[in-house]
Image (cartoon, rainbow, N blue to C red; front, side, top):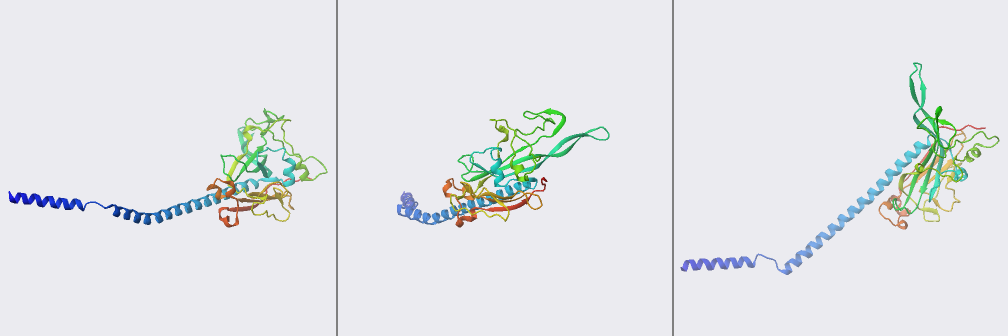
Length: 328
């Protein structure tokens, strides 16, 4: 009995001692929390900084890629141009092209539009065949800056085009036109070819006198709305002064939009020589993106500043049309 009593008392004392040493005091917990806070807070701040830097660099990279892609697209378009309007020409035909709310036409030109399998013919064996051809089309690029929540707080570029149809003496009569056209190849609503038959005036005057074929009070169709080419274009202005870089044009090229305009944005502008020495049109095109607009939604905080120029990637190109119009 004495041995059993001694064993029980010994085990109870050991158990009691272990229970006393199995937990943490309040002071120990507070000290541990302070140490954890001092270690984790700098690490968390570092991680947030890394993530923000990565986000900013990604925004810059995306803007640069989109600017390059948009400029390549415009370049390919202009290479098919046979006449490019300068600022005087755009002002002359502005009421004839499609009006765009809060949009300014920057590039307006005529081109030869490639049309696949447009011409039907019969070969020597009497078999029907189709050949590719070209038709004339009128193209306009607009710089748009508005408060549309579907787009960024910066500006965007949109493209609009109307083109001729493929004539066919045994074809159909298209609505609004008197000639016959191949089925499925009607001219776009409002299209009208330019007229070079006028005598005694310059080529510019002839092209500047172009009018559409819309009836009085009629408008372009719903299917002829401008299509956005690229968003996040720098919206900063030189007029009014907001710090945007000034326009630079080569000698003999006219600035679009004109320096006398009420609002001049240089995120997308062109310098045009409608008729050069070799009778071809040429254009210098300048684009500048706005990566800050990808990060912030306040328009006043995403304007151009020299100290933040890395957020505004730019590119430019000089293009000469591959075709030309000869007119006495």
